[in-house]
Each structure stands twice: as structure tokens, then as C-alpha cells.
Amino acid sequence: MKNSAGFSCATVVLLTQRFGTEAITGPKSILSQMELMGYKVLPSTTEAHKEQRYVGGIDAIQLEIGTKLRARANLERTATDLAEAIAVFAQEYLPLVKSYIAIEATNSP
Image (cartoon, rainbow, N blue to C red; front, side, top):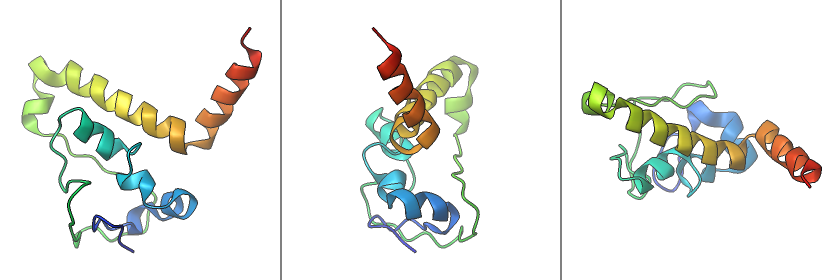
């Protein structure tokens, strides 16, 4: 299964069954959030790409972070930005986070 940008969705079967390919390349996806912060994402979420290497069947997302972004001088910024991107994704797509936010909202004064 491919999304509109050509990403293989075989490794995120459950995620795409629940939320569609928006969870992978939509505006609240981890990849799109990283692109919005200025990171180069390959393949880009905005360009057509046909993924041929990764066609497994596990529900996971793999990120590879380049050497420069892992360098001591950049690591804290890279980690913070990635954490923020994951938080946006989690609030949109992870049911436990949505449940927690709903509970907090009802319990706050």
C-alpha cells in the first residue's frame, strides 16, 4: 500500500488502518513536523516517492538521524525538535494521549 507521496505503508499497517496515510505524511505526522522545523526528510512528505526497500509488516516508524544532527553541538536541539514532533503526533494519533488530555481538561479548574 502506498500513500499519496509514494511512501510504503506496509510497515505501519495498524496506524494507517486507524488514521489513514495522514498519520505518516499529514501535517501532524512526525515527518511533516520535522520538515516544518527545517530538517531535510527523505523522502520528503511533499514529493512523490516510491519506497521499494522497506516492505515489512510490523507497525513501526524508523528514523535515521544524520551524523551532523547527532554531533554534540547539535544533539540537544535535534532531540528537542524530535520530541516536539513526536508530541504533536502523539496528541493527534495515540489514543492514550488523547484520553489523558481529555481527563486533564475535565479535571482542571
